[in-house]
Image (cartoon, rainbow, N blue to C red; front, side, top):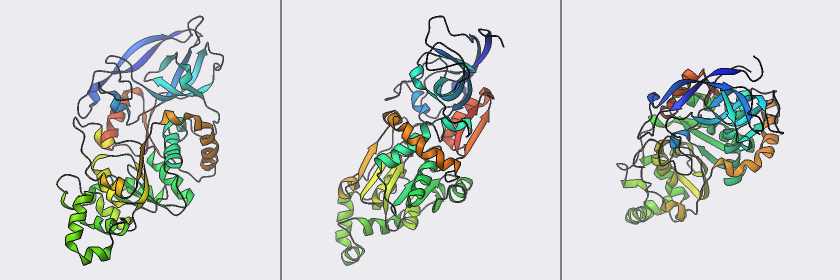
Length: 391
């Protein structure tokens, strides 16, 4: 291939704004052409995309009101994190042949003008795809959310929802390395087995198989500073009144999914110190009464809400006050300054086999639409990656 040659360029195009659950037809393939030479005088780079990342937040960008994310433009090429090889560069920080990760487009080749969004890959002794997973945004998300927001201590009780995903699988392993008791939930038996046998979670459960809400009361009564098992038995009327005051979900099973609570009572009889939130909605509502005093919640994502026209309400927020819970949302770009420190921490763990990572790789841009849409029905096992080309 000659320098500056113009080549064909398959692209994944966003069709238009989505309401409700997205479909594969919301994306389509198109063909264009691109020069492999940077325009004269430009500080841009031309890259060959090798791997592309499918991330739940991309669903938010498919809506007109994308909140803090800039929405995708109908008729434009999809964008997201990727791993790529520099084909030509007008920027002094990048040279032909460099391997980079950062924001690129869903196509074979991309002219990147916003080069501040690219990072050189410092270590190639690990799979390149890791730089859009464990060594990229999901890894930094898990690191910042768990260590910076949750301020964990050895021996604490940690719960991770959507635990087999790109972020959750790492949070659980970070917690185990620190000496915490860790439980995760997922939506299939295969994923539950993965959590326990591959990632070393102490326990895991399939939230779709849990039915009993009432068992969560054990955790509520043993961890609320105003309630004890003895007091509940002594005065059931008082318990009824306090339950209503605290907004416990004793009489509200018709307003929320009761699925997770049985798992919480079995696996957290003493309550939860740290909840790493990836799901939202009914899951969050069931967790709140099971939190311990001074518990911490890192709100990373709420995938159960992304496809709803009207978000679900949360009924148990009084627990945040009563139990003095710290709940904080965050977005990963606010923690990019921690990336060098994160790499120093995580790379040795990977090479020593202390941290495992599972990817679900779809080959070819033609499989990008089903790979992305599959995230929202739990089809992926581990981090969803699209392999566009070999290096």
